[in-house]
Length: 126
Image 1 (cartoon, rainbow, N blue to C red):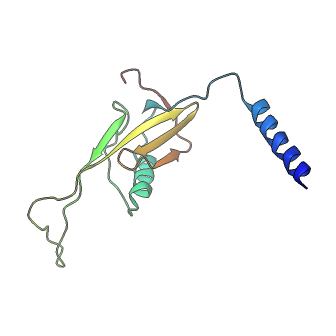
Image 2: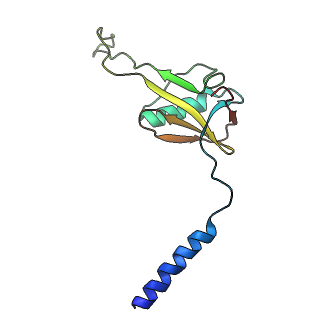
Image 3: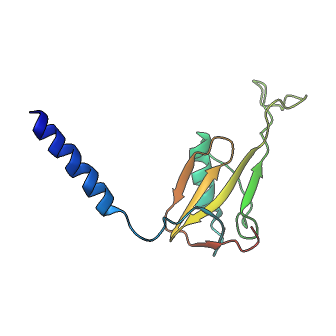
């Protein structure tokens, strides 16, 4: 039984060594959208925030790899904004790419979601 376990462990170790590629794994890089797509970005950010919806400018992630969302003012039961100091910090997000894939990442939590069917390019200014 011990021999079988040892052979299995050695086989797994060797297969892991053989599976390694000589090329490095691409890292996440700051990105820009090739074409504006605020609807898909808003859906992704809403998922990251566990929110029903988020409103963004039409050109989000077209000229900058980051976006900051201010916290919405809380409302009283009648729907009026509650005046006073905001206690929550704004949420910041960044668009990143890895290979051919685009992702939106929440900067505080590092939670990341892929933007499917969206084309992006590396941001040369970052």
